[in-house]
Image (tube, rainbow, N blue to C red; front, side):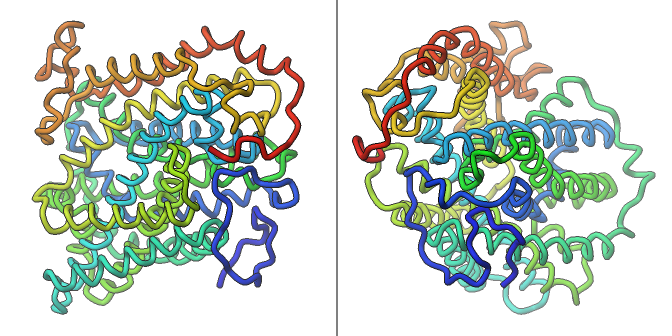
Length: 500
């Protein structure tokens, strides 16, 4: 099995795989190995999915031109993954999972609210990825004349679900090896896919796509942010926590951002060219984002395409199920990490069954899911980043598990900031294709943005508002609190208050 030259945990490539026993506990210095560049493997492997091509159709769906969509995609992808890079620095400074490190800002038990939000987001993402892998497999089998009906979908769902759950249950060691394999295989096959369908690109059609408004551009930009980096920011420190404290912070930020952004940027450009060349393809992507891409492939490459599609989606789902298990533990569930991951796997399969066999639309609920949860996650991200920026010392790790410690139990300020920013954010986003979200956008008319049908209705301003409000609010209100925490004497490392 392929392994990276420097594994973050320092294990030899031939070491026997075993179930990871680490949960919310701090990673000991003796287990922290590797260099920031090893972060390339999990981040690239998790984001090299063929789904990145579909984002070209999603972006053009906002009614903007190729160049506008390209600018929105580049800025949205790089900026959102840069946020992940900053959060990843907390991992090497505190050697605990992301949602445990958030206790420094939210308090030990106050942090349960963002932990629940993080858990819902990651379970939702792993469900979406599992369902897409299932639908893609069925589409490929249908084109080959090997079935493609209910039986094929059931078998595909079982296989994809099993692979994802096994990876999440086994934990860090298997994930790092699996992501390296996925990186190599999907990278090569994706390049072949691009070569095979390049003749479907017609620049005359692409360049003829009309220019959209500033509001439509902003909507596409925010959608890219929520579809990429803001979907990962709540798990960004889960892998950097295995790095030594002496690892370069710039290196952690750079390799996280580069590894996560590289594949989506390349795939987005090609996806924009394909979608802009064919309105029919762009429309088909909305119903079956992966399967629609098979319609322009030669038959002989369908099986390799299914392999690259499934592996890419599984790569992202495995990281999600691992982090969702950690978030569930941080929310207060007292079970071993692998049990939490297994529980999330069951929810993932149930949700995938609904998407594959019951739901008659994918893009509408998907966009609603991203924008709705993107608001509170952006609010959490703003607080986390500001809190991290205010700190000059590493986290006091024992106090991350003590409600009576320096970080407190349930401080009200961060919770009120989060709730206020979320309420404002939801009032500034809409999604007309998901009827269960028609209550959103309630501030668009009172604040003069033209209401739910006005020009700002789909600009998704709520996400940016939540991020900015909590970031600036935390910088203004938490400076004294953080300074006071850092003047205290470091706590002795004891077992008091076993991981909560």
